[in-house]
Image 1 (spheres, helix red, strand yellow):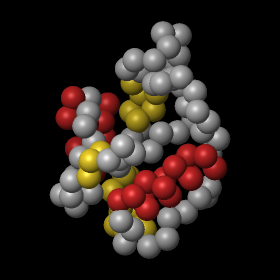
Image 2 (cartoon, rainbow, N blue to C red):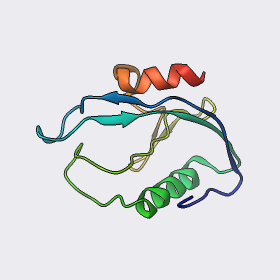
Image 3 (cartoon, rainbow, N blue to C red):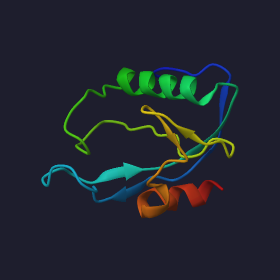
Image 4 (cartoon, rainbow, N blue to C red):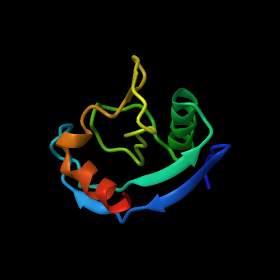
Amino acid sequence: MAGSLLRTRVCEVSHLFENKPVGGPRDQGDFLNGAFRIETGLPPQDLLAGLKKIERDLGRRPTVRNGPRPIDLDILWYAGKSVDTAELRIPHPGMFKRDFVLRPLLEIL
């Protein structure tokens, strides 16, 4: 697997759901969305750094906002903690407004 996170274990994985993109270029294709639940000993900022490394290892490069990308890993929730920095906001601010986030999330809860 590209990248790994020390002290982290995947516990649940949702199905993938195909969805129309929200925002971004008009001519981009559909997105695949899913969710997974992990247990980790990493603090939120270190977890985010590890997820960003996995994205880079899988070919993600900076492009237009909300544009097509090979992978996008977000932290939606972290054990009830609240984080609000320039790099990270937990809980994820848009998760309750987006069906493409809620559908897979509900499947793993």
